[in-house]
Amino acid sequence: MSIYPPILGGLSADEFLTDYWQKKPLLIRNAIPEFVSPLTADELAGLSLEDGIESRIVVEQGQTGPWELQSGPFDESIFQQLPESHWTLLVQAVDLWVPEVKELLGQFTFLPPWRLDDVMVSYAPKGGSVGPHFDYYDVFLLQGQGQRHWQIGGLCDAQSPRLSDTPLRILSEFNKEEEWVLNPGDMLYLPPRLAHWGVAKNDCLTYSVGFRAPSMVDMLGDLTTELMAQGHTGYYRDPPLTTDMASTEIHPSFIQQVKSMLGELLDDEALLSDWFARYMTSPKYPELSGEVDENREAEIKGKRYQNGEVQPLGRKH
Image 1 (spheres, helix red, strand yellow):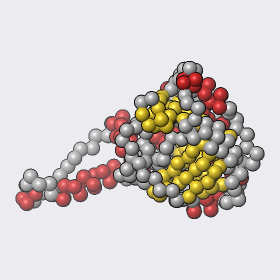
Image 2 (image 1 turned 90 degrees about the vertical axis):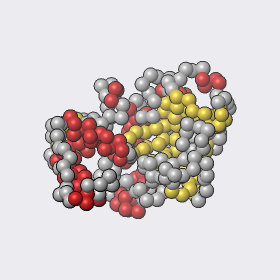
Image 3 (image 1 turned 60 degrees about the horizontal axis):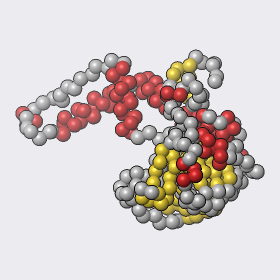
Image 4 (image 1 turned 135 degrees about the horizontal axis):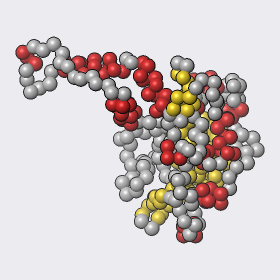
């Protein structure tokens, strides 16, 4: 792997990871010189008609109200019913279905492959947008066709005000701090929780390379399921009791005891390593695992994991 990945525009991989990854945005002009989109808008629309492919349409002023969300698979007739502008089609995991899109992932070998989520591709005519929002994951936004105007704001969290009359998580307050217009081949990296707003200046396609960021609640839930499957049978036990602890008020010693017992469980490095590798390489669409290849690999202590399963060492896919 080159220490100067071409897609980082002259930055070394170490410089990017130290100074930008999960810290601050980075605009890279001409990240892929003379880039030609491997998909057309019509081809992307065709994917949104297929069962098993996750797709959405966002209409800024829809029939049911502002920022209307529609979910696929769609019928061809829907594209005749859309307004001339101010809407967006988004199709998830296009890398699973289009080999030329999957090839884009070869540009990101400076990051662990098991961190990858998918490549989402969006099409929008002039004015198309999904509104000002933020994500909890890292994303590289590669302009494939046309131009998109990006604005970025500050960091957000679960308490940041949002619009209440739409199913989308759109910020009700957005304060622009920087802005750029991206042309084909330009790329914008955004760290988690950074407010951003992209609006199409003309017919445009954007490739969003996203990286997994499961919530701690989801991770703990999956770990609990794994522990149950393995038959772990640890039970609660009291700390040393004293008479002043015989109260309806829970004494701090009980809380410390629970923390200690959970800590003992989490100290099992072999268990955590095996669970984490399986969890982070599990297919995003398990029902399709026999039809498509989700190229995520991880290696821990002599084991190789792919698609959530342990593979023999030396066997590459």
